[in-house]
Image 1: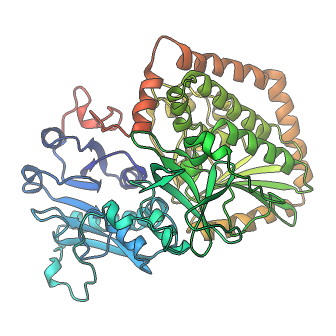
Image 2 (image 1 turned 180 degrees about the vertical axis):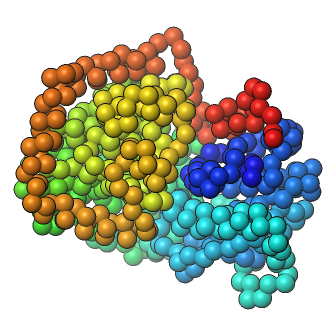
Length: 570
């Protein structure tokens, strides 16, 4: 079938659905929901058999839903209605939630139901639940609904005919529903409220007596202070006391500003707080905020790095490089880079770079520092000689993060992960992280150029098929971690481990003799220098709009196939 994906943005769920439906033989085109007239035009051009809306912020026009079956993905259980479904579920601490695929009608979220799926709710932030449980449940439900539609004999169920419906109409969650009372709220309440707003819109509050929105909250079990006071800082986060403990605040956004690490949003104020460094920084599973950690199990070392949204600033790259250099000296045979739960890495930190342009610094200079720090980190991984290295992707990864991962000897990805191994969407950015070395040697020159040119996301299964990755594993994040640990232990125990290490060293020596890594880096950085400092401002414009979350003015042509010149619906 021809299926039009109508969406507010090309987010992780839209990417996953597009890829999954394409793999099942459907012809997919995408249109951003910008205006009724644009949606109507897309429908007229593509003439879809079915319209699926994974992520909308407004209603589909009646001129479309009255003439075509439009399936809405709602992140709520059957009967739940309203624009803040996931927010209410997290803030109220429900044990189980779900996704419903329903047909668009005049009344919002009240159309007949084509499919639904439930899942247990984790105690975590909204953006994490969305990228994991919601995305997985939505994928299953949409695939089932599409199959039912294609069969032609399925009758969707009207909400009124369903028994045992627990969902109900909910209003838009406003800041008055999210407000914090630091003199009364315990840590669990503060965490729930900030987590329910994470990603968007954040909780309106203050830091250092200055208004801001709070994001990225983590519990602290040991440190204490007067409720409401800021009592410490650690790397990018600040610690605020509650009535029964304290909560780390990782990110904040000031009025008319952009979301930044808390210590970067309030540079001078945060610097005056006492530091709370971690003794034995590598220890893991402590009840506190920790963005880099390390553990050893037998002959395997695991390096974890949990960076918000997968963005890696210059300072974070340098800290991770130092941790990797330290881990390389450990007596282990296999070294696994675990990344974080939601993201492995998305490369350079565009928000920190944008902030440089707002504080009297240079965005071009910070871009240059950041890409060089990413390259130094990548080089540390590429030149690891005494261990077999593995990039274990439990979460999505994109741009430079993909090529940092590909610098490892092996890439193991969870089945639900989406990869975006390209740069051009960010204002024709050329990219670095030694991709001109690592990608062609895995895929060949033509396939490498096609990936960069086409700018399409890859499922983990597709990445395996084309040779970008080495293993695809099923299961949720905990199951993936268990499988990675088991597979890494087996790899460390193999009788030919020494032969593998010797072969790795010999291959690196041959490659270096043929063309040194320094030459690849210099060639890539020459292109990046033009992106950052040249006459074409495309990268800076694209970064500005990305960071500011500017509404899209059009759908990129590599997504909207129905807008290609000469395209005619069969």
